[in-house]
Length: 464
Image (tube, rainbow, N blue to C red; front, side):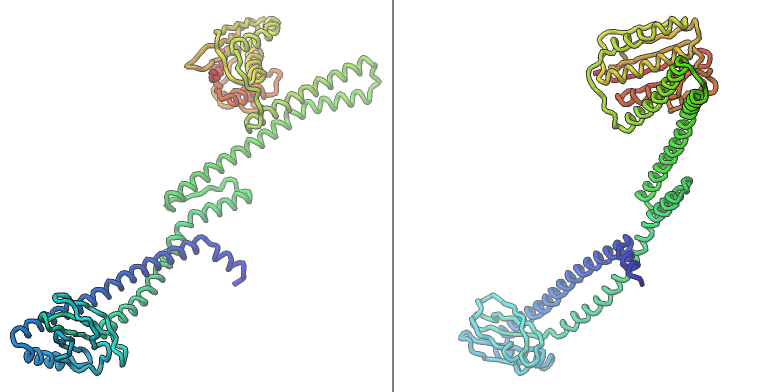
């Protein structure tokens, strides 16, 4: 296998999850074995101690009923029944002298008692090892009467057999558990990662140009399904932005082509004709006018882009909204009179907003200018400012041509021009700029309109 494939294999989340789960299960299994092994050792030892205690009590009864002779006979019977290699018994008097003993050949020092004499009524247990062959055993020291005590032990070879068998079975079970856990963890991780792989494949196809590609299918788990849903929503938004960018580029090209063509035509006319100084000045004036129009388009686009991206820096300060609306409306009185349109302004005092006065003036001016453009002579435009639930509500209402219901959702888009509205000078950026400025100040702008009955634009700004 190439080194890159090995690196990718060990870097795989599926492999790491499987190994982590296998290691965790292995540790838990080892801990469970250790606990079970310790309990088994204690249980076996407890059983031997209970047996030795029962034998000691039996020796007490035999000694009390038959004396030392009866006890000697019992020792002989125990030694014959269990074998001298499996049991040892010694009886001592009050001076510590052995008065009775079984065959200790197989036990050596493990069967000896070296004192001190244990207190009456008290028994002690010890784990011992036979010296000749290292066999394990367990012994008890305790009193039969006040002046006679016993040292008695039994071999625990069978315990070692049980523990060895337990360890062997554990190793087999441990290997099986680890293998099954690794396989199970791999399958679970593989299923969990299927959703991530689906997202990855979709992302690769989208990066290759398949913008209509989406994550399909569910059942990968809540988190993965949610990732797929969010991914699809993100792609929808990206596609919408791409389409909007393409449309915007087309609109920009369209809007710039006409003035550039006119400028080029003016320049060609100037170059091939014997124009007088007066004609040249007129041509230059036309070029300046066309350039001003281009600059207006570019500046408006830049302003909208900066505000929507959050890069625009507003000169924020308290603004007397009533004064602002009144001053802006007064600027259009001469234009309204020229077009024989009635321009009325109604404001309330004491309404203050926090914002950039120049930008807010630009937004209100665009709304009033639009209203005058699309209102026929003899019509009326009303500008008002009122308080509305702690906010400043600015309304611009006209009696003009109105806007169709199909056009209303799009009028704040850049370069959008309705086919149902009569052609008037403009570049389709005015309302887009209004929307950007108002939302940039934390406000809202909406419109209601009917064809042939006029429109009403409402700007809501939070009061300071």
